Length: 234
Image (cartoon, rainbow, N blue to C red; front, side, top):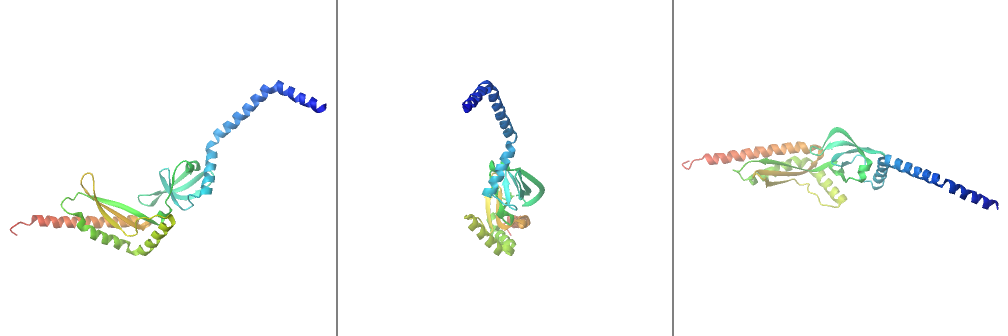
């Protein structure tokens, strides 16, 4: 009888206060939803931290590209990943620090450039308007100069190239340098160089090769000019 009376009292109280209880439940639900909306970015950053911790797409010290920004990973925490910005055109540090929210690491593609920190497939080109000479006559000389500049690290480059191919299970260009010729839309001669070299020496080797290329073009143009000035009587 006592249990029955208690049950009836509970039912009676619920019947009297059910609207207040319902409004209270809605208030609690609205409060929880508001908290989730306010802290959504923080929750996503935490989920991003769990993602990079479990999948390990990169480690501290790797070079990565996220959202069009490249840099070396210096630290990670539950909110953000800190990058030391790298200019991929010169392979040098800009001195700027990038703070990438971890939520972007689960919404944006991540490119790991870890092998480029030591060696890189460095490609560059030189364009010259030279319609009087055949550019292929200087190809052998350019290749000779390229091999000369790469001779000091050739053995290490071959080993590093093989290590990268075995680790990534792909075939990459190198370590032998290459020189090819193309034509631009305006009909100019475009000389394309490709070198597998230490990252820190890439810019210096590029400047040396461009200097040699210009000298060879000038030399061949002078020879062609001398031939054109020779008269038939001579």
